[in-house]
Image 1: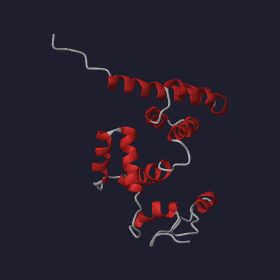
Image 2 (image 1 turned 180 degrees about the horizontal axis):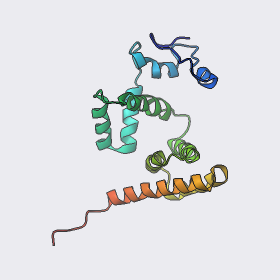
Image 3 (image 1 turned 180 degrees about the vertical axis):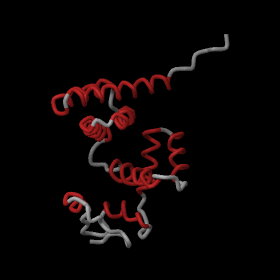
Image 4 (image 1 turned 30 degrees about the vertical axis):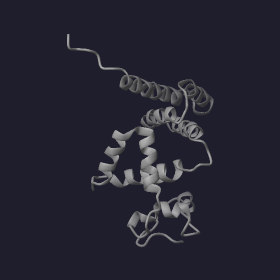
Length: 178
């Protein structure tokens, strides 16, 4: 295997995780996306792609906040870097499935995982990617027989919170000058 210098798989890794990390070609997309963990291999343009997609999904202000954060050495900054480079710059950047469908898949998985914060974020991303509120509601309904009512109720609350946040941001501030 061709892992970055100084990197070792923890002895406690499950067989599934060990198989997941098997890399047969050092030039594979998976390897190049993760190869700079120890800074031993130059990244491809996944960072730039990831930042561009993040900005398309979340807007200029949040993207600038992410750029600023990535320049720090704050606790956990590597998680944000990996998310930008791998999740957005490698996985979301794939072109074999339309972004609208990617959003459907991600929302379904997040509902199953009961990840309310991520459902809220990805509901907004889904709207940017062309899903309507009605289609997001249908994703919620489709999840019920597979994920159960408790998971669907968590998702419904997160989706409604996302819609409310977007509505609040779009509404003009009330005139309090009188």
